[in-house]
Image (cartoon, rainbow, N blue to C red; front, side, top):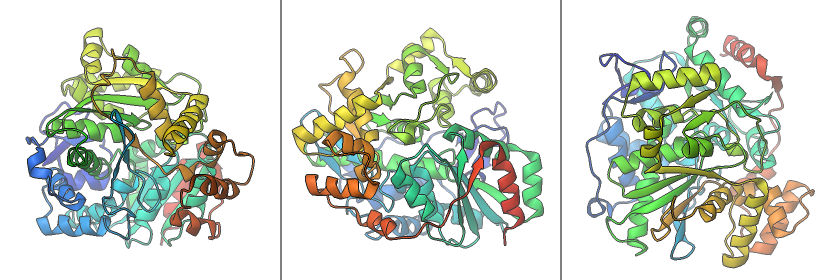
Length: 500
């Protein structure tokens, strides 16, 4: 399978899957997309008896056609096993009631949905490097609003020939997310806090990737750049797997029938998670409606309601920090498909967004978009209220991102979401990663030390303190660098210069 840029008008300018995954971002600043999506229609009958690993093989083969069956099988078995995930189903489905289920995406090593792609991605990247006969050292640069950083660090720690640097907003992640990153083990990892927000870090990294000066500097030091964010196809396409698996699990449990449609509500930040679901639908998974759930940084919710994406607005630090994003990278890929794969139109709109901070689709285009997608938001108070309500009524504890999605679900009327169709809330993180909002919801003193809060939460709810957080609790802090957002590029140059 060949890949091209979302902004590429010349149909002959394509790259192999191994090149696209190895390099991450296109030279023109666009994102790699398949020249043509796989022409398949997955059915329940062909999937019903398959394990998560076997479904993974089926999906990965569609998008990485240069790998042998054995190479894919080995990578997947290394990524998804009892060492890397604490639930044999990898992604279990928790049925709340006849209307709603939760797709639990947080049973991996770092207790967040990012584990589902980042457990596999390092193995794919090494295969891509081998296929491309690339002998340079790979430097992974990643921006994180909380969960990507730890999952990427854990996935790439001590992988030979690869180094990784993660930038995160100093006051823009939860204390547990920060603890996880700052205590990360590995001889090839670096974690840096910035005085800025996630968008500042992501934008700086994109400049580095597309800069001829940086590429030349890296090349002189025998280094090449790659990405662990979902702008990379090696991060994006493994996320399709869990939508397929959730569908199979819903039918197996008798929640829906084979071929019956269901809705999904996705807490949305960089748009990779919900985009993977959109692609899963194109492969035959019967998803009826996609609801993009935002927190107070509701740029996506506004787009799906009005057709205008305007990032010229105040940035808020919320109690769902992984969604504190105003410039969602994968949104560009979605636009490409929503606008009938018109690269010229996409290029014009993204140019408007990057230069003026705003883009708008036509009324006709918005109407077509709203047939499949809609957006809504929930503020911090509504998020805490949702956590409290679901715990009191069902004894089920949600993290704040999942609570945003549930709150949005409850807000929507029948015009925007048919609630006679079963809805899956994508549950993206373990609640123990966010002590403060959980404490508020349960009536616990949220000014206490985070681990003390979690001890009390565990005692009250009976939710076992996660083993992986216990390991973090007992570890020493290794990283304490804090730099200004304007110094990210300087830091990267110095890191390359000193890379052994």
